[in-house]
Amino acid sequence: MLFIFIPSEVKAEVFNKEQINIDINKSSINFIGSDGSITTEKCDDGSIFTDTKGLTYISADSLLKILNNNENSFSYNFDGETLYINKNEEYYLKINTDTSAADLCGESKSIQKCIINTDGNVFLPLRDIMNIFGYEDSEIIYQPNLKTISLNKQPLFETDKITVTD
Image 1 (cartoon, rainbow, N blue to C red):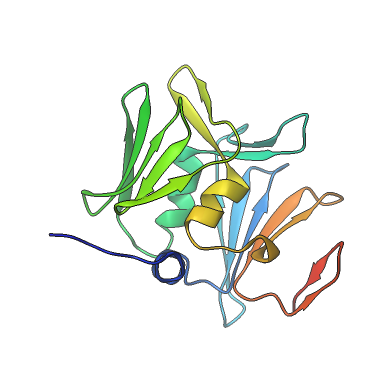
Image 2 (image 1 turned 60 degrees about the vertical axis):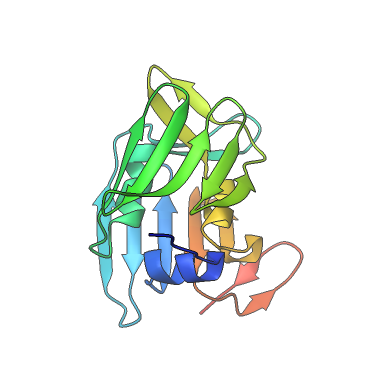
């Protein structure tokens, strides 16, 4: 069986919440629904961090918390070189941690920033992985004062420094 997805369809399928807020300091993920409801998932300490260059990374385990929030059945396995993310036990996304080459349902993608592999724990550059899932850069907002990242369903107003949403 062959599945073909376009990134916007993948985003709609995987992330159908109005907004996702990632709190780097608290290692938590807040899902804000269209009705204003908030669901919080706690992640392991250190599973979401910003490196010295300002790049934010998320562990594969924490990424699954985002992917599985909508009762999806995502899982992953890592063979030491390749990270496989499966949906309902079928291949979905494959990332080679040495070359940063990615394959989303048969479509070649690339990750521009390096992937960190520490003792079998894989950390992915958050912006790059969200871009693969269909988010535009304008929908991924880092707020340095709060150390949070918002994944917005739709940006409403943009300036060259900040995206404002309601």
